[in-house]
Length: 476
Image 1 (cartoon, rainbow, N blue to C red):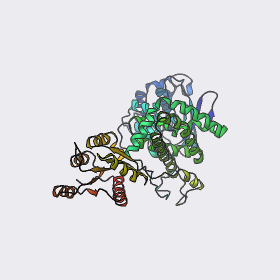
Image 2 (cartoon, rainbow, N blue to C red):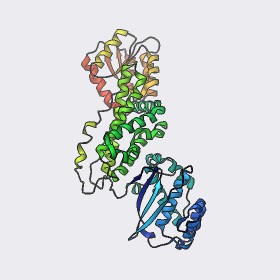
Image 3 (spheres, rainbow, N blue to C red):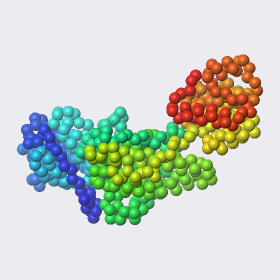
Image 4 (cartoon, rainbow, N blue to C red):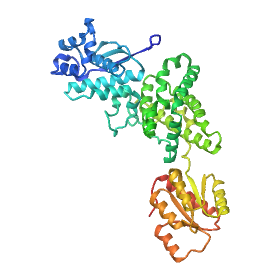
């Protein structure tokens, strides 16, 4: 529920005390003093006495651990946001070792994360473990990042799944078949990151326009859920883009979608919300390519694939939280994302290197008529310069053996040394001598004689591009 007039969000969590059921704070040796030493500012908590220090008195006399968690989470929120007035709460015993904690927070994710961190902190103090309070407070200042952190990242650690997800079983336990996430090539990842960083200053405007469109679409229901649904909008993951980590973004969307499913927010609603956001993001991204239709087309394709991955993460978040009886067959929401299924990964470019301008043009034309994207280079030096600039976007080089300056053999050796995933086809309009034939055999490199048949060239090109997409390095 929301008290919108005051600007304060009110939340509830149900806590299972487990082995601490029936125990009071005074009955756990050293617990009360450790908590007061760690969080001395809890002296401001009035608790039942109505006077500062009331919570400390309750700790010393003995209080249940649901009540302790309530005060710890409220203090964590205060330490993370000292500029705000202190939030308050209350705890009610539900019986059988369970209690309900009702409290205020500045927003949904901060409120949710504060409860998770408070439970973790109290558990650690009960076990007489050290607690890094500064790290917990820093996590609470940036709650979205806590849900994007992976298991092997340094820092306080990722949010524990069982705390984030409540009672929802994992996908494997629900019997749901795994699904492969749409593939992004290395070049696409770099391109998407550059695009998102380039509009970072305009993302608040995109968010505002999304919010208006979202409210128009969903009415009162959208108004009540906007602060939660926007958690999976791309602008919330700018820290991931700055550090060049798209996977952390997708991981965060999946985690947060599990939370949203627990709130019974329909998947259709999330999908439409992302569609609205994409509509407002695109004009900001594409304005910089107004004079370059080809670059604009590539940006559109790559951003579309980026959103395919976000939508896949949304779907996986729903699947992981599905009910246990959902085995093999997903609920009626199954059709929701069919129209969003990702295309196959954008194929890498082919670089045609030939000092003969006409031969270069004809070769590129043959490849482009089959849907391949090409670039051209006049000589080996220009080819290496293009590779250095966009090697992740180049999967194949058609390289003339006989060229002035840096010839084909030297250029080939440098490509193979610096770009092992890039495949090469050597070509020549002159008969090969014995040394050149030995060179081709030694390096197991493909060769086509000019003039070549279109079918021969296309067959070799497609085979090598397929190998490039597998990620296996070329032979040396």
